[in-house]
Length: 93
Image (tube, rainbow, N blue to C red):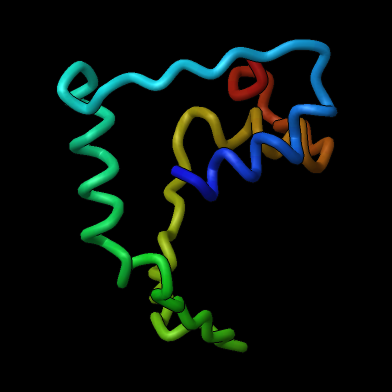
């Protein structure tokens, strides 16, 4: 608690006004539980995570070609993409 008060004394000049209220642990059970949990997990703060760069993916990509079959849309697609218009009048309608 003394360390906190020293820090407050240094920081108080940055504020126009402030108020310090100490709440007893018995009246603030949630904060007390959190402080105990944080103290118990001291090892977690020093844990390091290693990041490894992989220049190429480890998973292989498999692609299967699908052949398209001609249907009623084929002449329309050919006309839009290539400008091919059917020679037969009935096919064009």
